[in-house]
Image 1 (cartoon, rainbow, N blue to C red):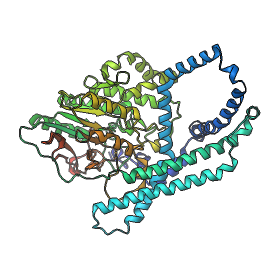
Image 2: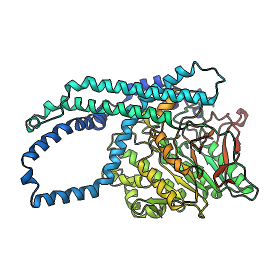
Image 3: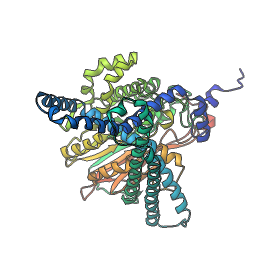
Length: 586
């Protein structure tokens, strides 16, 4: 039988969303041609138009209400009505405080992600390109860091000035005091409300961009880790295999979203990695196998099934695995079409979250505990905490209804951080964060954000175990690598929006923590502000089936001065399939 096209090798359709096979310009062209305009308009109205209108009309309605109230203040705030109003406000604050704060925080960082951070990052990277172009190739790292800090500060000033200028242009059309007569003709308030919103957001952008610039310029700059710790033969050690971005697909010859035909097919490389780990564990036992996100390629059920299909073949390794969600597990709306978007009320994103919760429970449900926000201490295991939700989760997975989606909305939020506590008072524990931003668009799926609730939980956990050592595990990178400036798309489209803030927050764990992440498929070990950071290469996304890939086994130790040290890592090579070996196997 003669085939003109070998279906095992794929075709152009497999490259539909590939950033390695197609340029961003080509992807943007497809996005414009294929996007659903009604959905886009509705999403803009819900996410931008309506919030902007409400933001701009608040001063008008508020001033009108205060004017009305002030004329009847003595009658309004006396007697039983005063008591009733206070009680109602207290109940609403008690019941709605935390959800309202989460909504506000997500909106705040979404605004950062959509406006300030991209504008600031573009300006910053353009300045760095310009400034570093004048530096000789052998310039000292300290001087290069100084130039980068200066570029950050200058970009904050430039973006801030532009935003302030926009607010100044909109100012003449704005109005800040309203009356009841205005409220009788709300259609006349629309242009005024939007002008007010432009002024408010412009001023906010100006101060926020300046804050970004100052924060980036003032913080310690990341640098390569030039030396590893030492440990005596009888010293305490913990061996941790660190994998990330394994991008399991649901087909034997399936290609990944990002790589298309430039990447490996199927899940052979994952099975190869597990076989290597099983052999290593048999001769020199591991304490932990950590997979820092992007376990699946698009969060589909078939992909999770394939992951468990490989894991079940290696029960000794499966018992050591800890996982966390990546952006591909949660935020890829359609793996074949970057133009697809989910409306904010769509249950599809919740379905991907439910799949991930179920998978994490199957992997580590009995070994990790959920942080209890009421007691500010570690609470039940993940498995126990999900018991009361099992029927609801199963019903939602079966029906995917909006009603069940709303009732499960808070479940995902309270699941993180997950914590594997240390076995002893001064042992090694793992804090598992969810660093994925709430995005609804495949084209922006890679952005990250760590909530302040998770950051506060880290503080409480550290207080509960004051002598313990920690691996802080997340998907996104905290800081940009101290390497030559690369494509703007990598720095902007994959950023942890509040990374510099989180970096400062983790400073209290200096000497007692190592941060491990994935996301960028970059092999880098460094430190920033005294905190050691380990970025994992992807054992799958490093090239085609013919390419060699690798991962590391890290050994953590209690250094002589009492700090948590990182020994020289052990590289584990995964040889590629040579052409004579035939087609890849599942």
